[in-house]
Length: 332
Image (cartoon, helix red, strand yellow):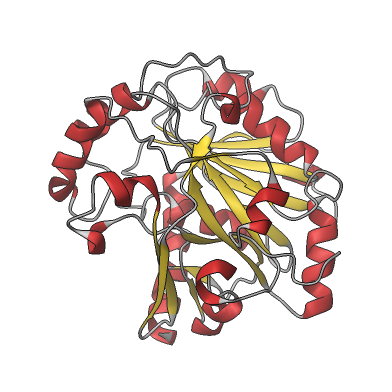
């Protein structure tokens, strides 16, 4: 594991050569500010609310990598006072799905700071997120000796077939995607990295029901007090050194873990998902063996209906805590 970690850090160091600076405002990052790292491709429709959401939570600076974006994202982000931007035309897959690029930026700009690493379709919430910012969260984590915040990625979906809803760029995606699965979720540990593997949700229920081992991984560590000796292994699902993966055992309703945790509201299923799925099937830049997921993309392009009569409407973090999908760790 130590050799693998060193190899991944070196790989991210080499990946710096893929990146071209568009605008660098990192000299504005104040000591102690939480900084967010994100790789995006053609996410202009999501960016206004994404920035608004995380600004409200107290993120001080955003570091974006734009991978082959041609939808106006670059011009939009360049105009934002608290954003630094890099561009690349290199392979998303070869960069470990963008992880090498963001890890290099974390190595350069995030050492010994609390870093948020999220996708454009992920909105982090946590206990008291309507009244306490991320600095309060990191203070609490510091008090408890935690280095990372674990989070369940909660797939949100609309009522009715995908693609028939309306969405505007300034809109909160949760106004369109209002439903989620309360369970069942399952969790297990994997060796040798001791990383958690949580599965479940609507994609597991509807498409992967006869191949549960292929269902998406839903556990992440989006918020980490970063160190140059750390490495993300598979997106933000797992970390090295292995001890970091033991900072969370999964949702309380599955594992009984009552440590402070969060939820990543996953807004993948906005109306554009159908066109995007067609494109990504052709690009083959996702998944280690993208050909194994052709049927998955074909399924998404049919506009499936993920809703069923057991689906639950999202109302807020209190509801999710009562269900045991996130925990406050005694943080009252």
